[in-house]
Image 1: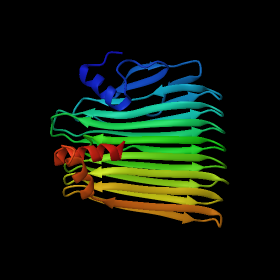
Image 2: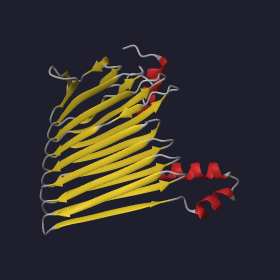
Image 3: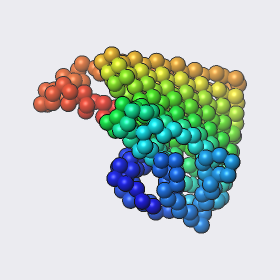
Image 4: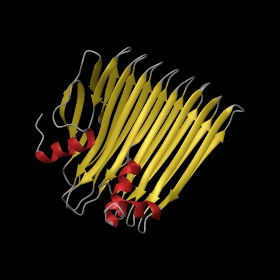
Length: 307
């Protein structure tokens, strides 16, 4: 695997990697495979019918990880990739994904990743996905991830999604189906600036008895950017569901939140919350009395909010 300096910098941003990781990995750069490794318990297979890979994790696999970052450094490159994940029963693994786009040209660069997860009985998955963009060109950096999660009986899925810099437009779609005693926890962090736009659309079908879902989005909108948060939690059995959106609005930005819960069973217990507002004046004053400028105080508050 040979990555140039720009690709290495993107890899660090989206996967926190300074070098080739240990364990299983698949690194995709500018539409092609740039490196792959499998283990005795984790196999990665190239699809034959469309772009993408199958990640197959054997039942009972414990404390192993898979890194599957995507790097784009060519202006005008647009791709759609389909990745399917099969997590065997009783496995306990971490998957680190993410996409970094560096665009110095005038044409838009776009990555659309469709990730489908099949989480086995009593399996545990932590999924981390980061999006990042940079470059001095006028071409847009576009990312439109789609995530489909199927959690079998007793399965546990924790998802962390982060987008804090450089993405001009994103439409993030996540759908999930939970079976008996399955759990889904989603934590999203987004920051937009300039004229960027970001839309998040969550939909969870809580079909199983005693399943649970906890969906939380925290975001900051600056300048003239726009964000839209949509969540739809369907309680179709005895279950517990919670969806929450907390957003800070700055400058001339706008944020819209559309949380929705549907109790389709008498024992479905569902909660939705949304809070949108500016930075409190007393927070700024307190930090400024400690010697910070107003801009430095705002930065401290924003960083703490998204931590």
